[in-house]
Amino acid sequence: MTLQIALVLGIAAVAMYLFISERLRMDIVALLVLLSLALTGLVTPGEALSGFSNEATITVAAMFILAAGIENTGALSAIARLLSKSRSPVVFLLLLFGLLGLIAPFVSNTAVVAVFIPIVINASMNIGMPPTKALIPLSYVSQMTGVWTLIGSSTNLLVNSVAKDLGHRGFSMFEFLPLGLICWAAGCLYLLTLGRWLLPSQGQLDLPTVQESGHYVTELLVDEDSTCLGMTLEEAKISSKYKIYVLELWRGHERMWAPKSQKLEQGDVLLVRGKWSQLEKLKEELQLQYHRQANAQGTVQRGDQEAGEAERDKQLMVEVMIATNSPLLGRTIQAVDRRLPRHNAILGIQRRGQVIREHLDSVRLAVGDILLVLMRESEVGKLRSNNTIVVLSERAAPTPKGWRAPFALITMALVVAGAALGWVSIAIAALAGAVAMVLAGCVDLDNLYDAIDGRILLLIACLLPLGTAVNNSGAAQFLVDHTIGLVSSHGPLVVLGVLYLLALLLSEMMSHAAAAVLLTPIAFSAARLVDADPTPFLIAVLFSASTSFLTPVGYQTNTMVYSAGGYRFSDFMKVGAPLNLIFWVAGMVFIPILWPFQAS
Image 1 (cartoon, one colour):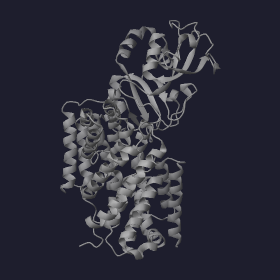
Image 2 (tube, one colour):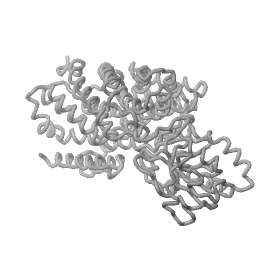
Image 3 (tube, one colour):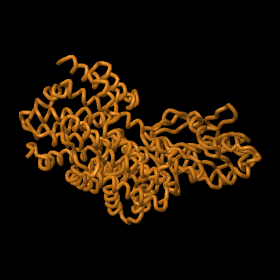
């Protein structure tokens, strides 16, 4: 082992530890990797910064804008609403799988799942099927169809970019489609049979519907008009009649943990938990106020009161979930509330596996928290274009905006056609489509950069030099000789199987982008070891790194449905492990057929 190999492997090992432990954000870890490679001389300054001008980085940035254009115009929601026409669980799932096959190969699966979550929840409830039977399949199938095309996921583009840098011919737009269709068909059959049986019938949370939300924690204020003034909680029948659980009573700075015998006074604040429909009923019948809404309205001057009432008439309740990449993580509700426009307020919070017993103002937001926000209808569109949160309320879904919805779909089709037919490179086609979306008003200029996930771009740009260093230093060959090389005597098929499993394991533990960049040079070295064409080994890395079924944290869409569906961690392992096995077997059988080890 040379010093260069030791340095590269050391940097990769530390990066893996940081990715797995989540001590730092993924994009910060990637930036540290780039700086380490440059400062140690493992890559030149040009190579260190090459990721920022790489075709994959540019394409992913443009695809974010294209996806935002399709989502903002309501084109995606209009297609997804076809689900509401199904009348049986099997037909519903078949229609869901088919729609995902039409959309997810061309649009970010994160955007697709964000739009589909509220529609799937409500449509499944309308046909009497638990949403937990559909949300994990929604995430899994969006990943399955994401490997149908080169632009289906950022991992596909990464593997293609690194492979081309290493001398490979590169992949065409639909080169993965035959294997993708086979895996999709096998995966869907599994999810309709054994997988459907393994899925839980009920999650740990009450799922929100258009008519009724889950269990929220909120604060109710007793004011001078409240009919429960002078009553105890038992006399007001808050628990017995409304099925509302009073967690605490706050009177000034005093906190009362067991307030059942306390007579309610003006200014008392009740910390309560229950279904939102019952909380609304309690508020109206006892003439209480939402404490946080009262605080927000308190800033309105009396001279503005009539205007304030008019604005509130146009307000609606919106349920939003905090995503894994949200900058709101770790911030208090009070800090977030200050950033909301006047008359808007966060009224309640729902958190998995925890009953909150503190002032909402001091609660720090975590991944998967579901907030109930009172806001003006005109501002919901901006909220939906923000990729750091997921709008769960179907009432807030955008409707098709005239000619822009078909324009957005046609633009995406032209981008795909232009790249697939070789008229223009994929990066230029995507950029042209993104510019067209902006000029047509499908993406608001004020929200243009909000549509681009800068963390993903930084992650990709900073990790690409790692692939260069792993290859140039000889680390890739060293790893192959001391791992996969131990089974090389059994032939290329066994090497392919081991490489697939290695990529699968790393993808579940660390960033998919990092796993793809690290393993692509190793795939080349493995091919040289058995004197075979590198293409089948690259396909194995691409498919295994682009799909994650085993854990709720392995892929962002898994995390989204994990929180929205109230699943347990073990549900993903129980349903995902057989699906991983199916994909591995399908890969071992069909990859050598579609991409022979010895190229003709």
